[in-house]
Length: 67
Ligand SMILES: [Zn+2]
Image 1 (cartoon, rainbow, N blue to C red):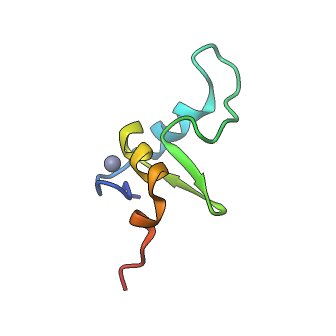
Image 2: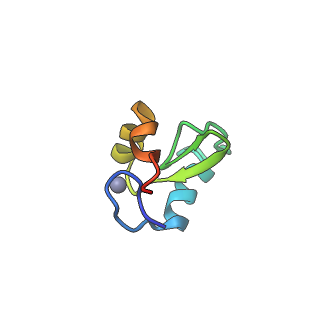
């Protein structure tokens, strides 16, 4: 899996672990946190929060079919 924004390979385990718990150990349920984003029925993964932020601002820019 690659980052939709910059095209770098994503460490999927890392992306999910960052959303698994908060810094205080509480379960993380806010989809706006971490390096993945729930959008239009699917989870999208990013290598960094910076890339995720870009996607959040204008998801259509990155979801445009390449066909
Ligand atoms: Zn990226």
